[in-house]
Image (tube, rainbow, N blue to C red; front, side, top):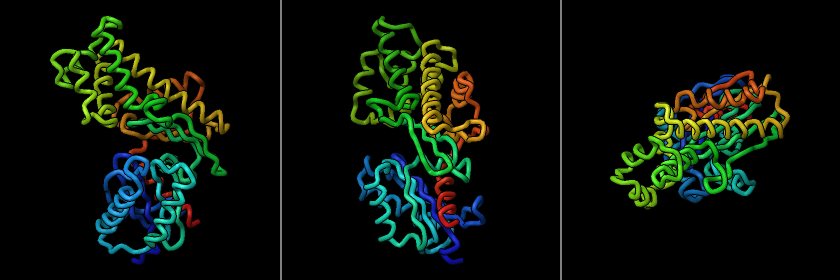
Length: 314
């Protein structure tokens, strides 16, 4: 089989990079032949040199897993975190052309757009990402997009794993001081952080080893406490779900999207790994009379990148 029969989809994030090598069956379908994985490729986090090396590693692994030698494919789509600006997309575009990855079409976009294409080959609807960070992005049929959230951990990312963990830690420390309601979160965080007393939470959290993703992983403690009925934890999770629903509502309003004919595609570690959290988000949307024609959890956004590569050849 020649490379012209194949397309490549790349999902590049702040934690990992995934590449799928697929053959095009039709505009609305493809078959995956190989996949590869590497480290982060958000150029704002690791720089372009490291990001591009990780993309190339993932691509080479995808060819290897398919039993093929690397060769130009007909189209490639790079869905890259940190590539919202034209200059960043042009940088990726030039790099792909210099590597001769694709003979016909090169598509570069951010890592949110393909989430919609993973759920709808037309790419019309709303993507909601709830992972370490958070973001809602909508897209309509002419390609116009709008986003809400995604302002980063200092001034945004409401409903994300990081925001939930920080809210839980704040509630725990307030309980320790007697400034807030009593909550099981205090004992749970102390146990998780090997803190014999609350004051030792400080040295654990402010350790250089506690980066943003590791703090975000502590969100599971808040979810566990909420599942056990802790009132404070329940309030934090409910507020997170409401904040995410507000992002979706904002995007719908800006693009005048009709939910009754559109898809809501949800992804991100928090949304995918916490049972019932997506249902809470949907409940808040229903409270605002927002009901989508289709709602799906999308564990493989890279599938949307492949679909975008396929569409580029139409």
